[in-house]
Each structure stands twice: as structure tokens, then as C-alpha cells.
Length: 322
Ligand SMILES: [Zn+2]
Image 1 (spheres, rainbow, N blue to C red):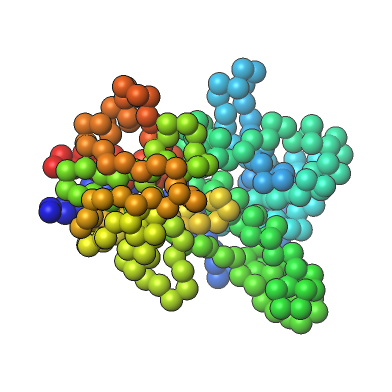
Image 2: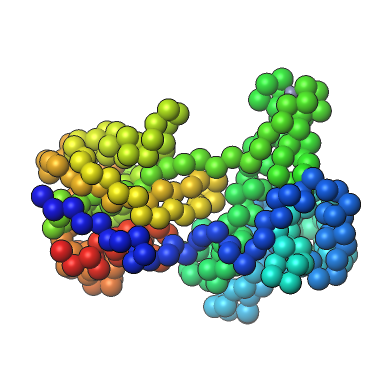
């Protein structure tokens, strides 16, 4: 049973990645005077989320969509408080790049209400449409993941007191017990299982009809990536996994995951599907997968689009040739 994962250098880069042109300026986050100067810099730019939806600009028929980058004065004019702005970093010219996240109630309270912020769009939809450049998509994903963490960390997990954002959005501190909380990223494996000539794709209950993708699962405490792949794939499919090869990772801001992309070698082929999660899983040849990628599968089966690391894994299998 051959197992020939592609060289990592040949692996397609996922659409969402670390925004390489951004300097995160982690060492400056706690320097309030420095952060204030960046907030006041007329060349700093701000993303805006309202209820985790992104403010965008689009043309009349919505066929073109771009990230709406605000200047500080535009946000002040809208009545948005910049006190909670999250510093994503500095761009190549040294200007601040921030994200501001309003809850639904805060967005309604903006003078002019939600209408002043429209259009607001779900990031998953934007990613699926390929509407944003990979650079903007990566920045927006970073902002959304951070915003989602703030949303769910408003109270202290130790004493229940309110937590207060600090360090330009990169820490929260409990006002009552002083507990410190840092942005979390949850690791999850996403796996292309192959027996050498075929790959295994699954249809989850939450997926659209006839949509098949690579299988995924959360890394548990005390578990390394390889053990997680073997456990998750056994639980979901009944397969015994041999070799596991890491290829690439992708930040995935729903809400704040790090998808760890692997190829895995199937040592067995008989499937025993965990029906609570998975509706179906099947073996597909390269040619079958190719027709699914091209939208030409005879039964109308499809695979994820280029926004996801699942696509990169599936494409790497088709391109690997055999
Ligand atoms: Zn506390």
C-alpha cells in the first residue's frame, strides 16, 4: 500500500493564511501611548464588524465586494468608540491596522443604526464567493477570530466577574480577581485519507446536499497531531491509519480554529461510519474527484471551493497522479 504525500513545497497555499505583509507588533501592544498614536494616525485603517458581520463596500448589484477600510475620523463621525479597537498590526508603511467589533446592541446604538454600517456580510459567505483578496481575507479572518474570542470571554471563568480588554485587544483581565485571559486558538486536524489509489471523502449531516469533503476533528488535551488523526479517523470511519504526514495549516475563524492539514495512510478499507456525525463516506478515485472539482460529476457530487484547506488537500491528491 503506497503512501506518497506531496512535498510540502508543492502543496497549494490555503486562501486564508498569516498575513505576511503585516507586522503584528506584539511587543508594542501594552504600550498605551504608542497604541494611542497609532489610533490617532490619519493613515491607520480599521475593519469594522457588527455582530461579527464585516462592513464591506459593494456595487449596486453586489457582483463586486471589497473590504471597507475606515479611517479613524470616519468611525468617530459614525459615533463608534475606538477604545476597544484591536490592533492587528502595522502595514509595510508602518501605519496601524485595526479591527473594531460591535455587538448587535452596540451596532444598533450607532447614530444612524445598522443602516449606517451596511452592507454587512458574513465572512464565510465572502470566503465561499472568493470575494476578497487572499491578503484582505487573511486580515479579516484574524480580526474575526479575535473578535469572537472577546465576545465569549466577557466574564471570568474563575470567579464570574467581568473582564476588561487590554493590550490593544490581546488580553482580557478580570476586574475582580485579576485573572488574565489570552486569545485562544483551537487546533483541529483535517485529513486526506488515501489507500494509494483512492481518497476518502465524507458527507456530514450539516453539509449541503451532495457535498463531500475531507474529515476533521479537534485535537484533545494530551494528544499529538498524529494520535489525533488516528483516533478521529477510527472513530468516524472505522479505518486503521498508518502513516500521517503534516502538510500545511490554515487559520479558520469560525470561531477561532487552526486547521492542521494532513495526509493519512489507510491500512484498512472497510468503512464503519459513525452515523451521529457522518451521513456518508466513500472512496473516490482521482478521476472521480477531478470531475467533482470541475463541477462535472455525473451524480452532481461536489467538493469545497478554493477558500479552504480541504480544497488544497483534495487538489494535492488529484495532482499527485498516483
Ligand atoms: Zn475573576
